[in-house]
Amino acid sequence: MKRFLNFLFSSVVVLVSICVIAALIGIFAMLIHESLPALKKIGWEFIASGAWYPTYEDAEFGMLYMILDSLILVGLTSVVVFPMGLGIALYTTEYANRREREIVRSVTELISGIPSVVVGLIGVLLIGPLMLKIGAWTPFNLLNAVVSLTVLTLPYAISLIIESLQSVSRDLREAALALGSSKIRASAMAIRGAKHEMLYALVLIVNRVLGETMVVLMVAGGAVMLPRSLFDPIRPLTAAIASEVGEVELGSLHYSALFLAGAVLLVISAVITVTAETFIRRGKRWLTG
Amino acid sequence: MADRIASSLLKLLTYIVFVISTAVILFPVFKGIRYFNPTFFTEFPSQGMTQGGIFPAIVGSLLLMSLVAVFSVPVGVLIGVFLSEYAKPTWLSALLRTTITTMTSIPSIVYGLFGLAFFCITMGFGTSLLSASFTLSIMTVPFVGGSVSNFLMAVSNDLREAAMAIGADKRETVFMVIRAAKTGILSSTLLGLGRAFGETAPILVTGAVFYATNLPRRLTDPIMTLPTHIYAVVTNFPEDAYWMAYGSAALMVIIIVAIYSIVQWIRRRSS
Image 1 (cartoon, helix red, strand yellow):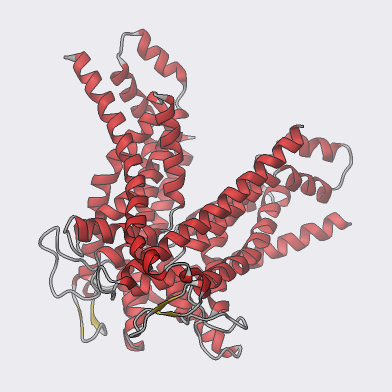
Image 2 (cartoon, rainbow over the protein chains, first blue to last red; image 1 turned 60 degrees about the vertical axis):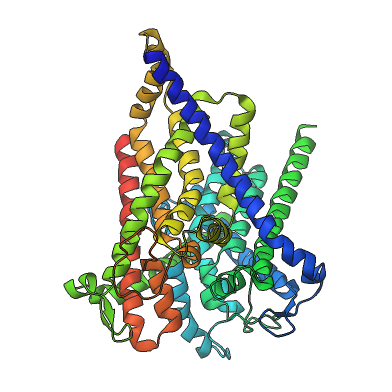
């Protein structure tokens, strides 16, 4: 009996693990299966053209502008969030006293779980009116999306970067300080020592922004176009999927095209992640000879 | 000298950014908490979301979270056990680790698409509580599993060896390890459910309606939830309905901060 129970438990554990792997395969399979009709019908035009008129009589499904909108948004947000996060993380790990460190750590953690729809609400009702005040012609635009996404991801970025800075051994830093180097030098050493971990943190931040849906759906404006200024509205891939999938006719070409957009999102994220990982691996090989 | 400047600059940056971002995030709480009263929590919305309360959204979120807990916590704990205690065959364990990393990096809207195609259409559950809870569970499992496996691996090997030495078999040993890591498992569960609670896009696609006149009776009925209600009010209703979004957002922020505080408290107590 006891042996049977033992066997039964291990089987359940292994079986459940296999099911989870199967679920991931299922997600990919479903995504490919549903996007194939669009890929066949539209062909490579989906990536070569920016004209996205899915509901017109002569429907067009060019995703180029939406892809570029996503990339522009990710680029701008990372450029804002990463240095801010790095500055705060550096202060927290290198300069702050114990109390400040505790406060930064626990508050960042507490607010890192704020749901994105709440940040979307802040973007619509607090940041939107501010946009009009500073001269934007619409409250919902690229700048609003960048600001809202910064609010959403900054706590996440701070904890990731603090973690990567702490991966540098304390000894190294203390040795540097003992040898009489300034704190700035020691911090610079910490940054250099943790550069791979930090690149990885950046990849996580980029992926988070790329996949973020509610905030961009609510505050980015939703116009399929290339922004000429920060005040122009945009429509990233995630916003297009979320806003259109609710109204689409099931099984139609438009429905399939939205799955294709989902697949494109995954491909972009995979390319970014793999590139960074190759970079990190090569860097490590170079370091160790 | 340069040190002093760098230090004060960073200090200034930290203080300013910190105060602003905290204030911004607490903005809905300040705006919304004044609408908290018995009516707000116990009545259906009425008069185009300008009167009444958010009762059906609260019930919907509660039902959804209970189902997600029932589906995802056992599975999450079991794969955590596999990774930490069995890890054999090695290829399966490596594959499962890769699966978990991949799944945690998939955007939530893609889970929504999958849930729509698989649960709503292929399985025929339609836009429903059931579809939404399955979709959210699939998102939550890898998070809980990865986190649980870390806590189990942190349990000292002495315990496993002592258990084996007194004649416990593998299963009994595993249960002892689980018991030793129970506070860690509890935090993983809370954080996983907290994340699922705030997810909006997947529910929007698989199970939510913006307005319901009665509570869901079956698993295949659609639901109202707090996050989708906030979205609906802010994007589809005029200004005199916004108070309801503020109130709902305040409630959500308070719940999330409470969950994270409990997790911090557990961690501080156990260390």
